[in-house]
Image (tube, rainbow, N blue to C red; front, top):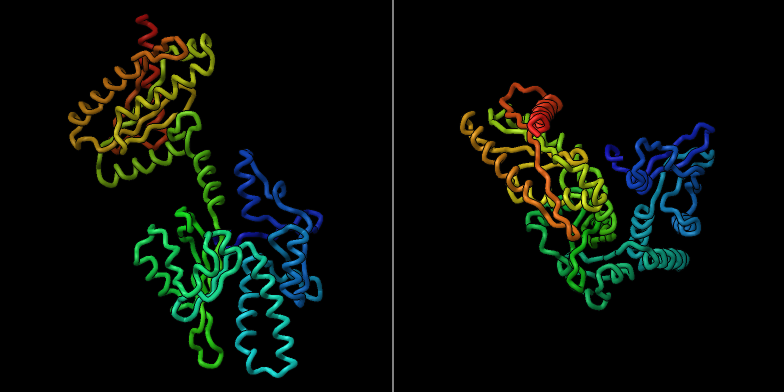
Length: 409
């Protein structure tokens, strides 16, 4: 979908039945936390189609009746030739609407009556659509907007007539952003992308906006601009939730195993390129299991959260802290001294701070929870192997420390 810039794909099922899968279906699959999602599980069977010669209004009504957002278009031989969605219908109806306006004063009476009927039909579609629509003159001053514009922005038509759409600016974009946008419109006739705008009540929200320049057929001069947009706040929120689930530990908020390996591989590449040193620190909480068994998982979870907070208080923002197991944490310690001995001293100081802080007891429901920590360290000097090798080195070093403690005790 990203390669072809589409929001839906046709699916051919084994029984020759056609169906469709959309971006929403893929988001549902990701949110379902399915280990191996298959297209056939989330695709909708039975593609609903309409003949290519049917009106856009008919297509709109069919989509509303069936409560769908995508519709297949077939030729007279029932061969699928395209897929249309709500945005494309609106764009087509809007262009039809403006085209008819240009011919109202010159067409004969019969043509005028026919155009009026089409305009009335287009107006109904525009006023009933969920997307906000604005029409400006060639100078960018708003001439009309639809009810969805008012619902999304909070501004009534009377409040925005004759004003520039810049009244909706959020302040999040630099002036060069708008300059580049209008340069594209000037060269290509249209632009689309994500924009942060401000509602009447002051709320800032993301929208997907399409702007098109409308030209006179005879002079080719720009007479109007049309803008079609929708509020994508919910979609953005869903994306953030999916990203959080994919890359962060839900209990502590630390990076999870996947994000840890991504950053470790990046750090290895950076270290090799710039000949920098960095360290990988592997931490395992001693006596964590007895606390879990004695006081319950709530106590164990509380201790893990406190551990994450304490690690954040010791380390810098540039360092990566991750939880990769039950009571196992790893730290990527960056920006070390270029001299090996100096960097070892830095690592030793950080190690002592971690041991001291994590050994302090913390209170949970009238109980004092206390653990110690076993630490394994590997200093990357460009020849320690890949990310898996480096993690294994620190893991082995940590278990040697833990084994020595058990023998001592």
